Amino acid sequence: MQNIRNFSIIAHIDHGKSTLADRFLELTGTIPKEKMKPQYLDMMDLERERGITIKMQPCRMEYQGFILNLIDTPGHVDFSYEVSRSLAAVEGAVLLVDATKGIQAQTLANLEQAQNPSVHTQQKLVIIPVVNKIDSPQARVEETKEEISKLLNIPKNKISEISAKLGTNIEQLLDVIIEKTPFPTGDSEKPFKALIFDSKYDSHKGVIAYVRVFDGKLNKDEKIYLIGQKIEGHVKEIGYFKPELKSVDELSAGEIGYIATGIKEPGKVRVGDTIIKMSNVKCQMLNMEALPGYREPKPMVFASIYPANPDDFDLLKEAVAKLKLNDASFTFEPEMKESLGRGFRCGFLGLLHAEIITERLKREFDLNIVLSTPSVIYKVINNDKKEILIYTSADWIDSSKVEAIQEPWVKIQILTPLNYLGQVSELLSSIDSKYIKTDYLGAEKVELIYEAPLREIITKNFYDKLKGISQGFASMNYEILDWRKACLVKLDVLILGKKEEALSRIIPEKEAQKEGKKIVEKLKETLPPQLFSVPLQAAVGGQIIARETIKAKRRDVIAPLYGGDYTRKRKLLEKQKKGKKELKEKGRIQIPPRVFLEMFRG
Image (cartoon, rainbow, N blue to C red):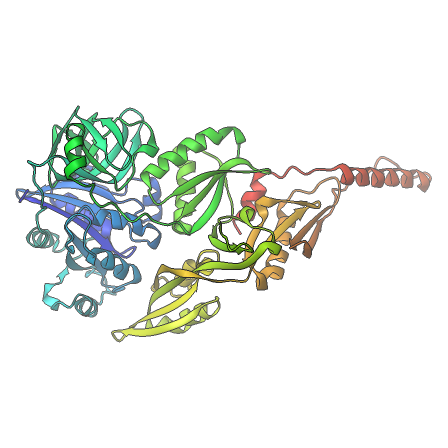
């Protein structure tokens, strides 16, 4: 075990984590040069296309007699839960900072997670600070080192300088990692105990659990037991990440690897559970507790997902269960809407998270789906003082029974270069927010702290707007604070006088008029015209606040008539008018799924 080093790379998005991981793979000879490709550890096509890491990815490397277990992590705020899980499986963390941008919001957030005592040792992780992109003409190496030096309270000469792109100083960095990262603690003679930090599904081997082994040894074909879920499994295969799965005969204390559990039900294996051997169950229950797991993430953004073809519901059910296995922060519950049939109410950590999940459903499971407008969770206190959580507009209760409404507020932390301070402050003042403080981090960077309702961040694309006005230089992180009083209403949409629940949404009362007008105008453009006129209305509490009408499709019934008495033409027009009136009275509209999809895009 003294030759094992387990470490993660943590950084803000686009600071070069995946490129640095590529250089490590090359230098250690883990991947032959002819097979090497950029972002090698980003296994999904989606990650390569977007240039971001979505899933953490472990990899075992061998270098100068040492075993190096690397876990590459995402940098976007929506995937911070992936980072927290990877940090629980390692002893060291490379804190990577882009020399052209300096310290960013997620740098601070990830560092805070790394400085908390780790799950298994109650020790803080060893932080190895590194400045990347020193080859860039825009690099501010000394200023960046100054920022890191103040942040970690260390001398500047303790900070490594590298170019992951060109491979500059990568070998020296590996030596620093080996020197500074403590070897894992544990005892291979004790009963087997391993923590699940991730998992995925394999149709032949069942659930494959990604584990960090803390004590003992495990061999293939042994029987295992999951303490949290109280379920047995039979080991089909064990191995390491190279980074593809490579089977071996034994996993022992201090190592990171995988266990093919043979369990075929995805919901039975949970991230954070502890695996022991069946032969040790009695001894374990009497003398040992399960390893501390992870704090369960609480999704605050909710949207409904429905199959475009109702016959695909079972396929969707299977797909979301498998995605949940691969992404513990994703939640789902069955629900049903008259206009869309059966589907699932899903919980996400943010808008990008929701976008990635829906994209994965389309690509990995070949499903055509309809996604509702993402909304945040609200809390209604009724006349009986009972608290009711509102996930979607369908959960809203009658306004006469509402005593108070509350919504989640967040603390927003924004880091921006000084020359964008004006535009960023203007953006913050355009939303319902509360100023807390401003801190100057060096001569060129400002930290702004605000508080705001979560809905302002989620439903108004705040993050994209921030990136736009700052040309990508400003960064943001947010954390949930508490519940605060809100003035909200349910906006209903009526088509032909019939309420379409799928199009309803919860909005601030002061925005009802504007939002209602916007919805009916967009619906008028999106909904196909009928043979009769179709009224579109937006209503709050039964009161109509906006209206548009889709005109009836016109057919020229008098086209075949050439000349002659006008009364013949009038008879045909009157007959057409009467027919349209009857149609309108009896008419029902079948709204195509693409209309819902277009409306949900906002």
